[in-house]
Image: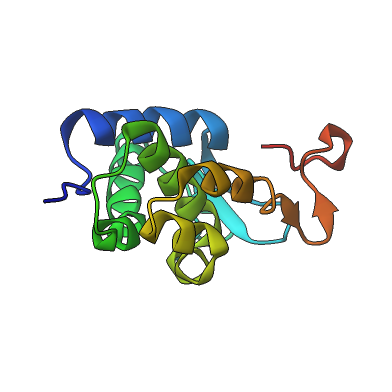
Length: 140
């Protein structure tokens, strides 16, 4: 039996982890890739000049994390909480389509966790910039 739904403490942990990594901005801005972004890294439907309240941003991240958790609900085994949170954060950043096509997802499906973790660092490039380098202004 599996329980990869995003509920309770796991949702709170996901909001804390992703929110901390993403940062928080109530007014839309263009990220390093030129995509309009707001709140905790939301991009869907964000336009130049958009403004959001803290409550709206909090609701957006909770809803978005639930959406990005969908591929993890198809994993045949219960994921360890730390693996679930790291995987969800990556899915949030790269999108569910890219996540489901990733080598990381294949490792998760097979419960092969050590190589799963090694896949995360491969997803560090945005608009040709290596975001592991702070001076590229896309660190995170």
